[in-house]
Image (cartoon, rainbow, N blue to C red; front, top):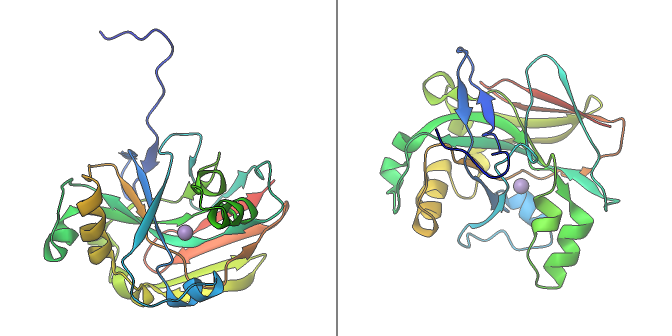
Length: 235
Ligand code: MN
C-alpha cells in the first residue's frame, strides 16, 4: 500500500443523476467570452476569434457539489467587493484525447451539469488590465459550484437547451446553448489541440450576457433545460 509523507488529498466526486456513483473530477477548464452578448458586456468585440481558456483548481477547495432540491451555502470570498455569478453549461469528459476532430468530439463527452463560474470581477479586471493572469479573479476557494452530472444520453437536445439564472427569483441571464459562439464540439476540438484531455476533466462552456454582482444573503438559481437546477446562497 502506498503511503505519503503528509495526508494525500481526496478527489472530488460529483454525483451522477440516476446512479449512486460519482464522477471523479480531474481538471476544470473554462472558456472565456463564448456568447456574443457577454463578450460585448465585457467590453470586447464578439467576432469569431478563436476561443480562449483559463482553469480553476479541480480540488475540493474550489469545486463544490450542489445537490438538487437543497440550497448550497457558499462562503462569500475574501478580497473582493464585486463577486459576480456566471451561469454555465458544464461538459464532463468521459474519454480523453488530443487533437480531437469536431465530428468525434461528442464521443468524448460523458455528460453535462449546471455550474456557476463565480468571479471576483474587480480582481479579474485588475489583472486583465495589467496583462497578468486571471487566477485570483477566477480560481479562488468555492469558485465552482456544480450540480448533478447527467449522462449525455439522458440530457436531451443539449445544444438547443435554454440556460437561465435567477437572483432572488428575478431572471438575470436567459439564453440558449445554441447561442454559443464556439459549440461544445468545437470547444472540445480546440481545447484538445492545447491540452491532452483526460477522463474527469470538466469544461465550463461560457456564460451568456446578464452577469452581475451578488452579495451575502442573495440566492442564485441556475437552470439548463434537461439538467438538474442548482441553488446557491451566498453567506
Ligand atoms: Mn465564465
